[in-house]
Figure (cartoon, rainbow, N blue to C red):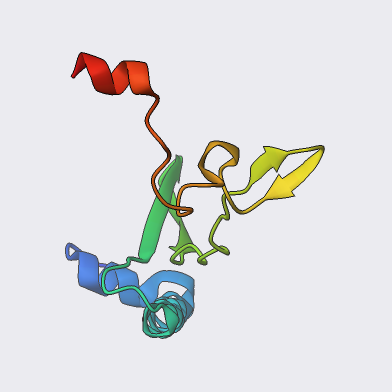
Length: 115
């Protein structure tokens, strides 16, 4: 009787998991991540591919269960808008700055005399 083939390297194990479909799944997730990065207008963004392999020993048998997760960049939401509460409604202008561009206000004489 010949000895069974013993595997010691991780790359071979990855190729054997799920009958080779794990590597296909990782290739698909990589393609999805790269496409998502290309769609993002930001100069810097990130995606994440996580491979978790659960090993469970039952007597002399070891079961390996791979789980692949993909985290894509967050979609940009719409920008916020600042409005001000004014007279039971909303205004684009700050209520205390409504006459800001109307020109200089007159200085009362007592303040001018102090100066």
